[in-house]
Length: 199
Image 1 (tube, one colour):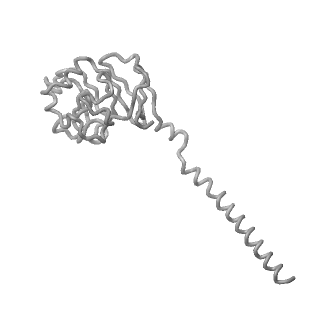
Image 2: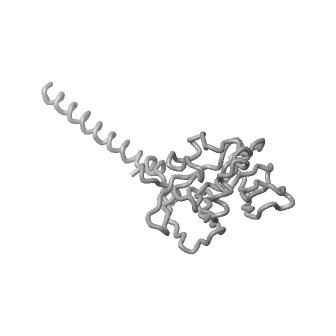
Image 3: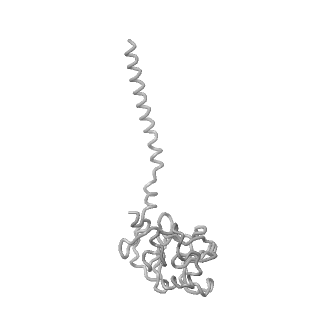
């Protein structure tokens, strides 16, 4: 055999070995890449949720789950709406104007913290340590005081929120309840987890 044939065989063997080894590395990494991708169940857990509110009467509240968190949808009464704007009530709140914008979409920065005044959509987790507050719509109960206009009370550490999810002064919770992204598909269907600005 001459030198030229040896060089040709050497290059052929090196190239073939490199291609086979590279293919083996690619095939070996496929299971690891698949393992790192989110499962269908994980993708669905973060997906937007459509909620039918057609049967929700004034004063009633429903709870749905989005991203493994409870979300409340409250149909506020006309009295609830007027109570939320009373000056004496606003002075009791830590952030009545919702200046902490990270707690809500900009389109909910209004007196009711909502797209539509009659409906509140909020994450049902206290901003102190993540406990679930209780819905206390009654006015002036003995345990909350005669000036209580209705709202949410966190049984873990006593934080209080009004029916717009705004926290009262001197509460352990540092900020208002979080308003998730949402929009109305129709008069009776809300899509939670997505807003029109993200489309």
